[in-house]
Length: 347
Length: 221
Image (tube, rainbow over all chains, first blue to last red; front, side, top):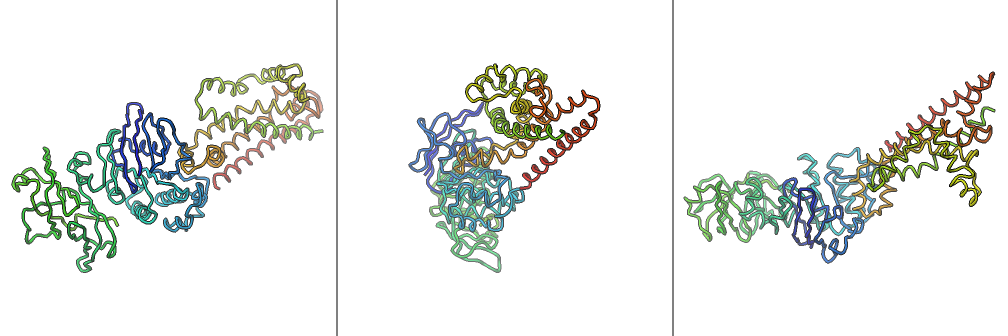
């Protein structure tokens, strides 16, 4: 568990951030210039706050009486630009901070073939994998990742993201993950902290924050939308569908994803959900979920409807006219229609 | 003997470079990285030998390090070291004249090092000393070689401050430039002048080629 409470003046910009997050992957999400990197640098000890406190589990890293130096914090830091030592081989880079889990890390990140090379000869994705390995071998209590995929193109991103998921699942490594890409955040995080202009606007469990109708204003209409954590229960080879199940029901995803029993997460953008008062017939959408309306929030450019499917929160965006015609009220039992093609799981 | 001043010059330039290099790295580091009261003053002081007439530098060395000089007396009384009119004095003059060139080259090296790499090393648990020894120092390697070669070449060629501080005593303080100058004053020594000039050129070229090779090796490694 990490507790962060930092204040810092940087010229005209004021950082004033408080949040706490359980063990797991905490994503710090926000537009550039919102103070994400400053927060992670304060945790790492690379930036000294004017006031506040930072603690990891019961270990105080910073408060008014002490500031543990960077070297003593035992936090692995993966920078956006990898920052490999150019004069050392990959192998020497990896062991610069220690040899913890040496073989396991090399195996997990697929670094075997890179060991003898120099950083200058690596692709962006390979550099980030080496940087990850280097941080892990120093045996950190937590990993700090500052937009580790931002400098990579879409294909390289897909080359690194699965490794991060493996670290989370196989090593159970706590992480603070800074990003402005919602796709990465929904794939990795358990906990979400949304920053804007140096302040926390919302934080909490990933699913709850994303499904909150108030998030629409903060994330923008494009990024708003709930995350569903489900299990693969079958595949339809003929139609190239993947059947998944979660506590709110079953959904068919387009494409062949995972194997039976795999846990997968996917995002359903709020504008990709259609609401219906009764079970519709003769429509092309494959997924019809019974849901309950939990909140309705009307603004001038649309209506956000919070829903719950079983215990899983969902979020839909519809027009004011639709909301009026359907006569939606909190507590109403209705149906959410999701197109199978609307969801694109990355795992 | 033609070879006596050549050997002395090489000896002096090597000693001057080796002694001045660590100090030059230290001063370059401070000038590049630290901001403090007196930064400009230190910078000016380091560069002074570059802009002062060499004779003035030599005179100041004589005043400070001569047998009766402020530091010279202390060195003689306590350690029995005499610098004026000795080969060690030649090395001191050569080192001081080459010092600003070394500091300038190495400072540029420090300024080119990505501080982010040092931060990364710290997050991996490395102490400040280890960061300096294993990250910063290797990264300024080429700049250090460039500085050392400049200092060495300057030490080989130093004339004005040397002749003022330690004169040109054959076999003791007579370096290649002093020997060339002395030979030019006496008719019939043209052969010696040509030889010494050729050796000078060969040494300078050799130093440049060596530094180029070392730099390439460091970059490739």
